[in-house]
Image 1 (tube, rainbow, N blue to C red):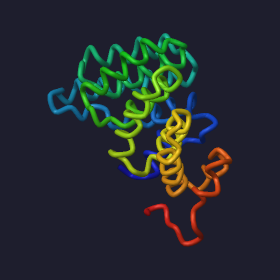
Image 2: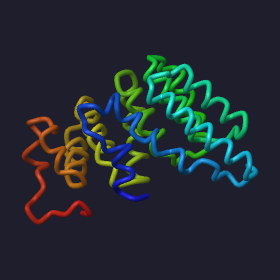
Image 3: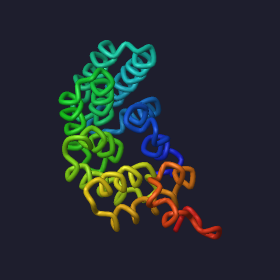
Image 4: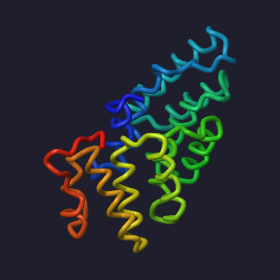
Length: 203
């Protein structure tokens, strides 16, 4: 996946990661709708149109309406991971983390390597289940090593668990991908994770 495209979804500013990150990918997903070969072209076109409608409703902050529309997508294409993901986004923004987790799990059942769902699920679990958060974020960065904010949250969670050496490495990788994250790294790790003048984001 293109680095810029993933950073839109998984590498947003740390300050807004717990909220805005879940929406960031939502508004570009409809372009990939209908890629399931088991869905006929007319049905795929209908699913794509419904996804677009749902996105417009979400932009207008009509979360209930958006979720209804995304569920209509699933009536056309029950294995549409994007619709499940978007339902998770809507539920997250509506303050229903349990429903959001169920939706992200449904998306991940269809595509276990769906990094956006892995990342959003990790953020939801971060306050209550740090070990599962660590596992999910490790899966995210294993699939896409350019997921800078996933590295950042991995470092933050490891730090809170007292695993400083691993946290330092995760923070270092986050900054290597996106040097703008340097100012967000906790002070005690900041100097050791600073990129060298000759370091590149591909290292």
